[in-house]
Amino acid sequence: MRKALVCGAGGFIGGHLVKRLKSEGFWVRGVDLKFHEHAETCADDFLIGDLRDQDFCRDVVDGYFDEVYQLAADMGGAGYIFTGDHDADVMHNSATINLNMLDVCMKRNIKNVFYSSSACIYPAYNQEDPDNPNCAEASAYPAAPDSEYGWEKLFSERLYLAYNRNYGMRNRVARYHNIFGPEGTWDGGKEKSPAAICRKVARAMDGDEIEIWGDGKQTRSFLYIDECLEGTLRIARSPDFEGPVNIGSEEMVSINQLVDIVADIAGKRVGKKHVPGPLGVRGRNSDNRLVKEKLGWAPSQPLRKGLEVTYRWIEQRVRKNSPA
Ligand code: NAD
Image 1 (tube, rainbow, N blue to C red):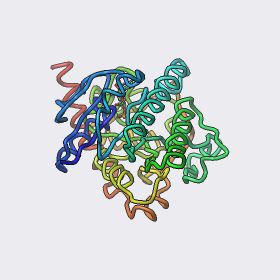
Image 2: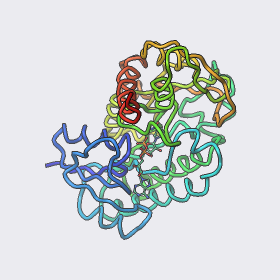
Image 3: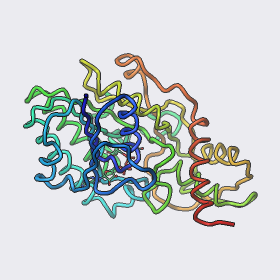
Image 4: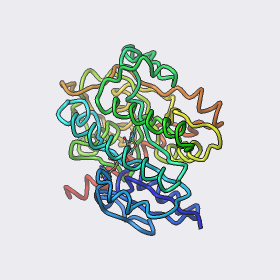
């Protein structure tokens, strides 16, 4: 039986990935600091521990795995990574996890580790125009990410690819662009904009105003979790293409448009109150030319479809937390 290891299996994407790998017949070990908060894990084995600890990493990788997915990271939405308050932890924690896991895998003769990098590595200077951001893979250099989270991702991308060159590994690197869906963080400060907007709309009465950080004209694209998993497995199993490659959607919307779509799904009239808040770059969109060329893949569903599922899931949680 094929064996897979998912680091960060107690998190949003890792939790979904475990399900997907199980559905493909893998024996799966999940690892995380915590169990998943929103779903029972279906991993065959789930280890709780800290991947910053090298001894723990050696226990986790106690034998051969056909596929290793390294998703564990200290991360969160704009309210977590753009305030500057967590910069040192984000860099130290995530870099340590990557240094440990990669070295342990190399020493166990495991060749293929998938690494989840981020669109946050792209230079701020190419993302100042909300209508024309440039996030083609080759535009990553000269590097100028707008957050320390992005700098750590860029360092770790290079680390995985250096192990390919120097130790004959076949690591694969993807740059995720705003992944969303059910069973993700939706409250508490680490949630990302689609989840935060779904929560605010779900809590609003018809005709209420909800708070939006900035003028809402900043643009982004969002990728539904099922699409993300498909792209992830394609690059992870690519025989000869190591990346880095964008895994994202090219359906760019402004945050104001995102609010309007969610309000429409909810069937509510919702006003927008623009307030100061951490913003990130002015515009960002995935550029899928390379992923189409190398992996013959691109997302297949419109943004609205994923938002419908996500909104219903968050609405249920909001109702449960504040019953009428
Ligand atoms: P998440 O925060 O839900 O999952 C990350 C998991 O890593 C968490 O469950 C956390 O407990 C675990 N973790 C953190 N430190 C750990 C440690 N020291 N030891 C063990 N486990 C630890 O995030 P996610 O949205 O599922 O993202 C998964 C990966 O994809 C991350 O590397 C993230 O940076 C990357 N990514 C995500 C997005 C997105 O939109 N969700 C975008 C770009 C990149």
